[in-house]
Every structure is written in C-alpha cells, then in structure tokens.
Amino acid sequence: MIITIQCPDCVGLVAQISQVLAARNVNIITMREFVDTANNNFFARLEVTNSSEISYISDTLKSVLPNDAIVNVNPQSQKNIIVLVSKEYHCLSDILVRNHFKTLGANVQCVIGNHQILQDICQRFNIPYHFIDHQNTDKQNFEQQIINTINNYSFDFVVLAKFMRILSPGFVANFTHKIVNIHHSFLPAFIGASPYKQAHNRGVKLIGATAHFVTNDLDEGPIIAQQTTPVNHTYQTNDMVRSGKEIETAVLIKALQSLFADKVFVYDNKTIVFD
Image (cartoon, rainbow, N blue to C red; front, side):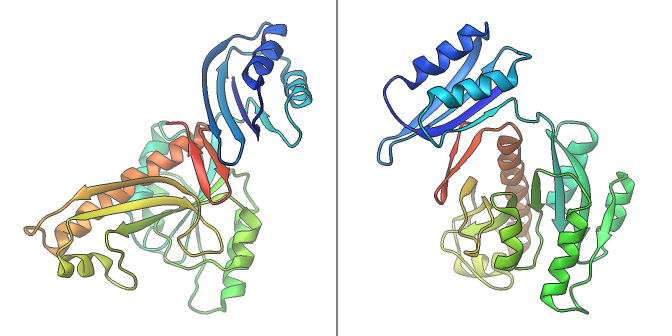
C-alpha cells in the first residue's frame, strides 16, 4: 500500500505519521521524505503493509497533520492513460510495446491523432485510435473534439507522445497537472522547424530531452525528468535525429513510470521526484 503526503513542515511529523500507522498495526516498509526548508514544505512517500482501514488511516492522518495537508492513501496502482500523437512513432511504439507486455505500469485506453499515419500500429496492438483532423476546422472545435473523446474514457494522465500541436490555455485548464509532454531540449535551445538540423549546423556537443507537465507557458511547465547525451563532429543530421529519438523515448518513459508509481509531487512550477 502507498501513502503520499504533502503539507507544511513542522516538528514531529514523522513521529505522528508513524504513531497513526502503528496504532492500526500497519508497518512502514520504506519511507522517502524531503523538506523544502526555504518554503517550509514537507513531502513524503511511504510503502506500508496492506490494511483494510484505508478511510480511517486517511482521516486520522489528516487530523494530526497541519491544515491543508494533501494525503493520498493507496492510490490506484494501475493508472490509465490516453496518448496524443501526430506522425512520429518512436515514443508511441515504446508505450504500446510496454503496455502489451504489462511493463508500462499503466493501461493505454486509446490513442488520439491529428494524422492517420499511426493508426495501423495501434490496430496491431488492439488499441482504439481516434483520428481528429486539425486541418479542416478551427482550433477551438479541434480541441473540443479531443476533449469529448478523452471524456469517453477513464484516465489519470494524457501523454503527448510527439503531439505537434500547441494546446490552448482553455484546453490545458481542463487537465491541470494531468498532461505530460516530451520536448527536445538542446544546449543551446533551438526553436522552430528542424531542430536537429539546427543543432548539427551549430556543432553542438550535447543533445537532450525534457519530460514535463503542460501549462499555459509553452514548454515551461514543471519538469519531471531530463537527460542529455553527448554528440560530436562525426554526427550528421540523421545521426542526431536517431539519438534524439532514443533519448526522447527514454526520458518520457522514465517520467511516466515515476508518475505511475506515485513518486512525483508538484509544487509551484517544479516537482519533487522520489526516484
């Protein structure tokens, strides 16, 4: 059983949490905690022995912890996700393979795409695919069709697996801290079309990727995971594209598996991640 706690910090929190659990004969298997001293915030993730008294434990913890404590006892162990895509297959295919072999840590409910090119691979894995064309409608109607499709499913997170459309603030507001995006991040950063070609032309030595929550500030939401990989003068544009796809795939799955295991806490515009 998992317990996550986020609250203002004060003396004796760990002792109070332990006493509540011990009183119900619940043993702590592992406990990770972090105190943001600058902002006086406490974060904890506990793995404990199973108990049938989930409601009692949750209510009792809230009663002994500071006001406004966020307590989640035994969150759903198997999350549900919806994946949004455009044309690139690398992140989606990794998710589908892991989903097929039950190693993803979540269930893919459906895939939504603004192109039809990835429909075939979804059909091969028996995953529903919904094509929503962005070209013959306005943005508001396009996004509303996506929202209507999403709302037909039970889901915990929406994953942008190289979905190449900028979502409006109105869309994002429906899914606060529920949309996860993978973004190529370079040192230095390159915007616009063909970022890997731009990186090759500049002779960069590192390329990387960032997985983050989507907010109204484009590509500036709370970061969940990042990674870089070295490149050198022998790399052509195609080599950088290949390496970029590999690192995007790795960073996205790392971020998702942390989320699925309830190891991510969102605070202001950053995250606490108990790897």
